[in-house]
Length: 153
Image (cartoon, one colour):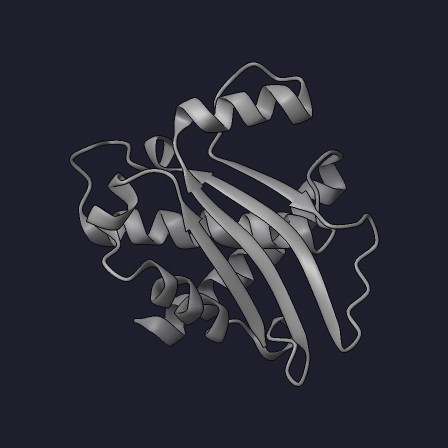
């Protein structure tokens, strides 16, 4: 089972998602079995942030002085999931997901689920540096998203 340790440094997140911990717990419970890591203790940290802070982190760790929707920091290059594993850290920017500001709550939640899945796959070693890797990751992302959507809606 996956345990997500959720931290928030942006108050706007709690205005959109009333029970943040439960929201991400439901997403993980809706993952297909191969990503649920049953009978194992798998965890990750999730920081719900904003453009200002994610830009600072992006500059510090990736030498890119710009905002982005998500950052993922895997705990290691080769994830080996035995009885327990810490996958790494995900940081998501509220400002990036809250566009357009007129979007409804359902759209915001769907974007949040998609970007969380994207970050989760990065923690598992997926990337989109080369075209073939991009298409492999995109395919897995779409399959995972469809599975999650079918379970939580």
